[in-house]
Length: 171
Image (cartoon, rainbow, N blue to C red; front, top):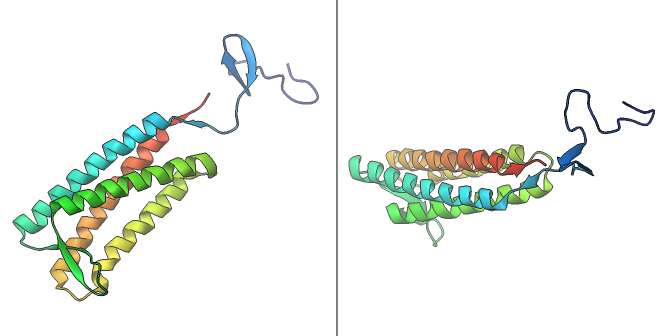
């Protein structure tokens, strides 16, 4: 039954309304969902493993099958490093954990965390996809490197956002 000032917290259809069901006690629930950090970071670790394997497979296919090197930024200005599977796997692991940390932060403070996460991961992926075209190497090296980076970015972005959504607990 509703009063003049609003609902008393009970719905006629058995919904919990603004109060949670806590063993018969009435307790006002939080307006923000809780983040299950264990689930989030376990998913981040699984994402890191997948990203590392994507890096290894991509390097094996591009370098081993097509005989095209994959490039990465070097320490010297304007220089290029040709990287192998281990380095690309390491980049995938680092990127996965950074994306997981970003997801965790956004889930704690942002109003629509997955929308912001999608945009940020998408734009970082675009930076890595466009970067090979800004240096002077053969076109096939540029295209192959861009394809490797886009596959890794899609894998990291989709897995982190999916498991982050799963780590939200409503109570």
